[in-house]
Image (cartoon, rainbow, N blue to C red):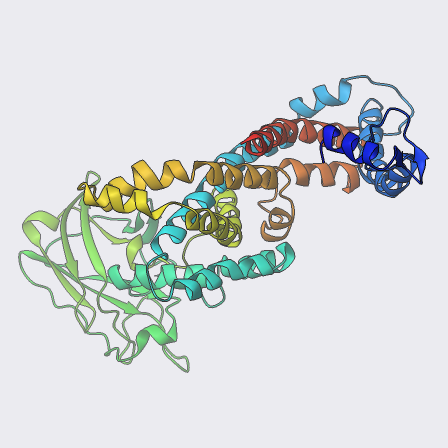
Length: 457
């Protein structure tokens, strides 16, 4: 009701409003809280008290505490902030935080966008979205435990390495006798790439290369070893397991029942170059051309004895941070997908159909129409995830093993370690907390500014 209408109603009723009393000027002023504004203050007071106790006071106390030393009695000014940037562990945490802020939100948003767009037209799109969004229902603690097992080095336990080892073993031949080594005093010495004979070999003189430490499972179907026969103009020899079950065998001597080691590569090396090579037969014998192998040394390359491939050390110092980021993306890609799908539902279909009628391909429609129209939603998702990763703590603390915790360090984890770890320094921990708050504030400001712009539209 406008002021003019209120004046007419007031004059029409003899100027009696507000409890039957004359309004004096004939105009009525309507207030949301009536004549008692303290009621609004009473309703807001509990929220203000909680806000002050849980947000304002901790921030103020942390800023104050950061100006003192570990004991809390000696005033050091900005000394804790200087120590923060001179500490190698904190610098590593800062670098990792930059990597987190750049990679994790971007990958999660891109995957969410792709999932939302690609599942829009398929019949089972809703089921797919449900599956992708389900990790959001899992706590960070549970997700950390899950991925600690996923990234386990043992392929029998770690899913990632089980898949990786399966792919590797499909395309790469395994070593014939992993872990085997020469018998002591057998004339073979360790070299840079396997085991090499101490003396050069001669044509017509057989060479015997006894090995030990062969696993019983690698000898299934192995035939008894045969003594190599001398051949003029050729270098011959035998490689066998110098071990007799039940005892009684002689070391460095080929006994009757000892097993042949078939499939081993034998190389003739001269001047650091391989001049000839051969593979041992089923009876352990091999033959090399004398014109090239004579005068060279024989080598059993390390590939013959390499340990079984155990996959990738996902949680080692080199890969621990990307591995943890992968677990974060697994959790939050569904969150990005749901928000983007909601924004995609509001995109006018007329624009998309008009572009297709004009001859635009699906990639052009996606790049020139869909993405620009979804830009506000993409910014919301990106900024929200950036604020989230600046405070990441749980996944890093749980997934990273003790040997890699320094390589995977982030600011929130360093804050915990400095404040409550072995070397407790609450002054330094408070300085990290204040610095982390300063990093979050610009992102929050951008988000609030965007919200205000949206309200004005």
